[in-house]
Image 1 (tube, helix red, strand yellow):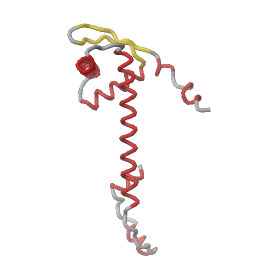
Image 2 (cartoon, one colour):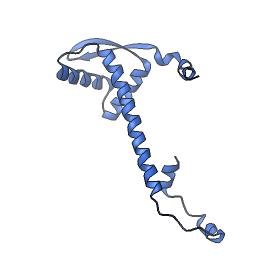
Image 3 (tube, helix red, strand yellow):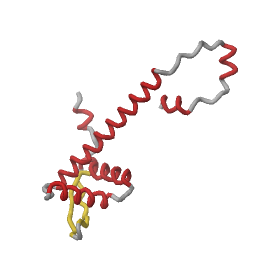
Image 4 (cartoon, rainbow, N blue to C red):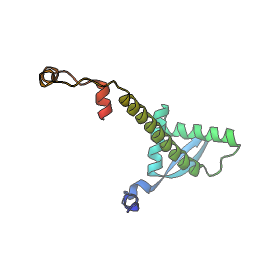
Length: 133
């Protein structure tokens, strides 16, 4: 059952939390699910700023782009989903690059038992470790 994965999620993940944030000098409250707050914090870390600073920047940019900010909480939810999707696509492309690099590696000659014994004390290449991970 596919839904089992979702329905067994810890309720704390979808519990809502309200935060007060000062945007353009005005104090406002934003109510979002804990998971959304977590994703926004991750986005902020990637941008090298605080979650509040990220939210203010997003607010200013949507205001500049659209001329208004309607349903800002929903905008933040969708923004967090789009961020996760972009991360997934980026990770997938990175994996495809690694897979392509592995498939074009030149074939090696078979190693005899005596050669294997002499090479067994060598360290594993960092690139190979990254591929295995």
